[in-house]
Each structure stands twice: as structure tokens, then as C-alpha cells.
Length: 84
Image 1 (cartoon, rainbow, N blue to C red):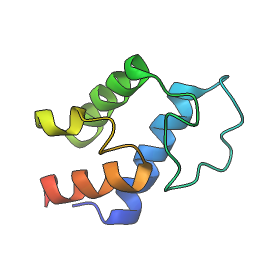
Image 2 (image 1 turned 60 degrees about the vertical axis):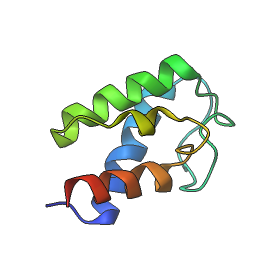
Image 3 (image 1 turned 135 degrees about the vertical axis):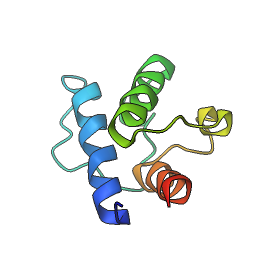
Image 4 (image 1 turned 120 degrees about the vertical axis):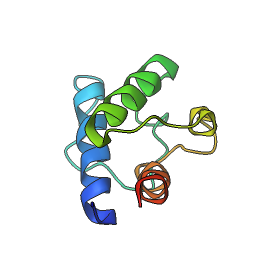
């Protein structure tokens, strides 16, 4: 079982890895809109696949709504709800 902070850290780490080189992400804000950080739809899908592998479950289609799940906190909350 993961707590919210652990999930959030995994999400943020994956985002930093995906967006590496697009801008300085040494301090990713948990509420920052990922698309303001330079993430595009391909990066987002890559993130979802990586998170599925990290947490061992398959996301429902609603997580693909990039407008709704646009921050580390929103994605982490979705994961916590799904795996607990």
C-alpha cells in the first residue's frame, strides 16, 4: 500500500524524467498544470503507461482526460483512490 505522499513522489519523478530537457523541473509544483511545464499529449500518454507499470494496475479511460487530470496532485489522488 502506498500513502498519498509516496504516490505523489512517484508521479512527480516520472514527470521529471519524461520532461527532462524541456525546462528546469528541479522543483515541480504539485498543483502546476503539466501542460504549462511543457508536457504534450504524447508525454501524457507516456506518463500514464509508466505509472501503470509502477503501480501495477490499468487506468480507466477517464484518466485520459488531460484537462481534468492536469497536475501531480490530481493524478496522485486518482491513483490513491484506484489502488486503495
